[in-house]
Image (tube, rainbow, N blue to C red; front, side, top):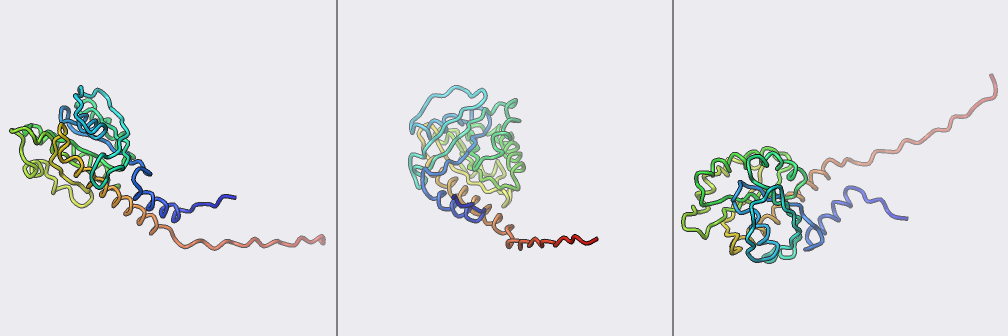
Length: 224
């Protein structure tokens, strides 16, 4: 007969499988304003080469294995969701049960950073309780008009997010892949840290086993 796996045993199993590359598939949503380079990021991670992508109308979904870095071999199911204004209300559906979020920013469009900031704040407020980690990619750093990562960080007000929103900002170029491996390494670490925290919180809520009540068989009398 099979044994019943309790919450504590299940947490122990998950803690082991989390550290075996390829055994656990993490859910990840790629978000950001339109033309930020989200789909280019997705297919650079998927094929480890540049793919000329058309604007996303709806979403793209790909299963990828990180090609390099400390997270090499780690499997992600990635949802690349369109960034047009009319599609942004759908973002919540794709982030409800996700392990991590990649938020892509076009570093060359300074005039849209305030818009990106507001959308990022909405995401972080929505997931304040679950503390889903966010990797912010300051994309298109290869272009001469791009502002550096420090200015992107200040423009997005990342330090205002507080401890309830774990984040990391990575300067990247999705066309060449520069910075993506480093960013995915840190996103993977943040995901593992968040899963450990959630397991710890769950185990703290598991109290001692309740004593079983013994059934007392009452005698029946035939006398009236």
